Image (cartoon, rainbow, N blue to C red; front, side, top):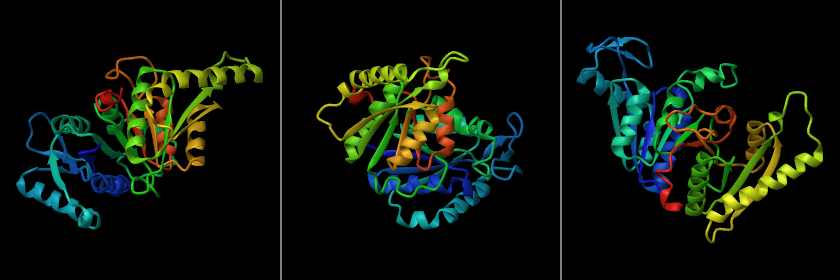
Length: 308
């Protein structure tokens, strides 16, 4: 299922958790792993100097500098590289999100793996939107393959893969996320937990819904899940459906924790808009930055078309 993976890294401690997942995936799928680092942004115009993305210092990216950076990456991931069987380390100069996307398109990778942010700060800080609104958000917005985002240490991840949670609404983008999650669950023999959170906070201001009304909406949501999603699965019965009411990101995090999820799969956005124009949905933002397991953001149907 995964023949070529792109691990986008700053080669700093903030990418360590993502690195472990990337190398696990390489070994599990016998895939080619491209370890990709963007050296920095040209300081101005066509200047031969760049601002190093890690240090903020001005550097000249000549061959000696590139060789030094690659050697540093090898040192950073020495333990993981000892077990690796098929990897390459590549660097380039430019805006990180553009170069990551360009590389992913050129290599036609099946997945991009990256951390949620590049600065070593407390993940519980209040700067959530500023963190997500950088390279990761731009990559997730435009990538034509799933983007797996790792924000915290992963205890089970892909070596002991058994539970996939897919958070759904009823948009076209959510359908792509479901198809990819289903394809993955079928491939690895994992249980697929199909989850929809009915947002009780979206009603009119000051209006409180009665329990009967909530239960009726949950019933209708379950019927839509069965019609729109379950009908797409052929001969696959290792799944469960849960419809909860509440604030969506809170409920999916609670559900994923309860099911000991190895991976959460969600649509990149939930609104019916052109994926290239969509912003990362606030629900996905909050899940990415709080989840105890990797989160896969799915934006395009390219890697799931054969499942449809």
